[in-house]
Structure formats: C-alpha cells, structure tokens
Length: 243
Image (cartoon, rainbow, N blue to C red; front, side):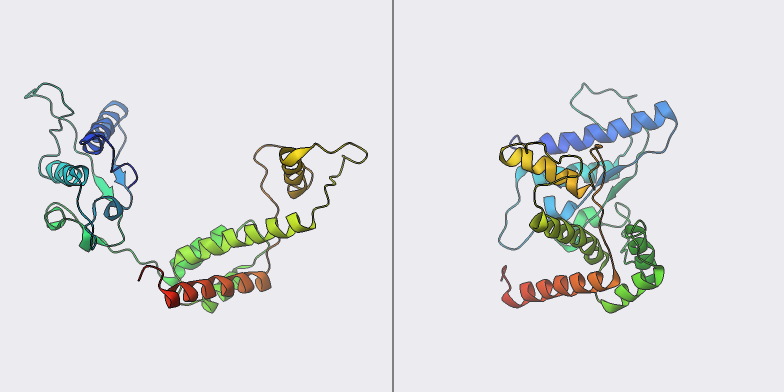
C-alpha cells in the first residue's frame, strides 16, 4: 500500500505494470510460477469517509481493471507492438475492507473473493510455531489461546513481541555496566559504548552478529502480558481516539 501513492502522477500505476511484466518475463525465462502481490490495497486506494481520491489512486484502480480485462497485453510506455503478448500472471491482493474499494474492480470475472478466517486449529499451529524455540509446551500454548478466545492471530504475535520487550526492559533496568570478560577494562564512554555492552549482556556475553536475545517464557508471564494487551485494547475502545 505504501507504493500506491507518489508525488508524480502516474508512477504507481506504471510501477504495477512494470512489475507485472517482470513477473511474466520471469515465468517465461525460468519456467516457474509467478504472481504479483499487493498488500493492503484498501489502505492505498480505498474510499473512506471525508477523504478524496487522488489521480494516482484512480489510475491504480484503472490499471488493475485493465490487467484483469486484458492480462496478456501490458504497456509500460513503449511503442505499440501487435505481437507483444506476455504470459498471464495472477494478481493477489490483501485487504481488510473490500467495501472501500471501487466496486467495478470487485466484479465477478475480474476478482475472486476469499474471506480467510483461521480456525482455532490454525491459530494453535501458528502460535505454537511462534513459541517453538521457547520452553513452552503445546498444552500451555493451547491454554493461552483458550484464555483469550476472542483474539485474532495478530494478538498472539503482539504477545510474542511483548515478551521480548519486557525481557529487554527488565534487563536494562538491572544492567550495571558489567559484562563477562570485561572485568577491569574501562567502559566505553557515551551511549554508543553503553549500548554495545548492553547488547553483549543481553546476548549472554556473545558478540556474534545475528544472535537473538534469550527470552525466558513461562505460562504465567504469557498470561500476565496477554491480560495487559487485552486491557490496552479495551482502553482504546473505551476512549475512542478516532471517534
């Protein structure tokens, strides 16, 4: 969605056509299946209350409609060539609210609509994958999911991130500027030096690029942070910041 607007009129629509042709060329040259994926289309070209369309949003919708109607002939500004026929490439879009998108683009024959709502089993498998490297059993993961029955998958993704944030915050508060192997060595001055040593401490003294921070995960912590997230959601709904 972030590339569907530009200071130059027509550039986002041209970008879609160029990437569509690139996907078609890759399919032909490499013999592999390709597709064009546009995430959160409604955020880029949707019609919301008290908002106006831009030239770019109108041209993006028009380009997508044209690709649906004639997927094998795509111009990117070159001279017209009658034999310039490319391979057809499927276009996959994601959106939260299709009602905000120009209705003719959604017409049957142009777009196949699919409403994906993960089942409890799907949620369990994905959430368990998130915590697979932590000391959490499948039964504990299922208990956490059952404790928040009305939450979507993004809630548990935020819960995973919250666990890491809490661990880093706790260790920052307890950090005394000492790292194993640095005893008797003058500490680097200034925030950059402090942060380098802090990261070494968070990584249990390791200094290999890409090491992840060791996080202690338990059922009690998951439930505690989950309740905190749920309370934040309830607070936002109560005060209605966007209302």
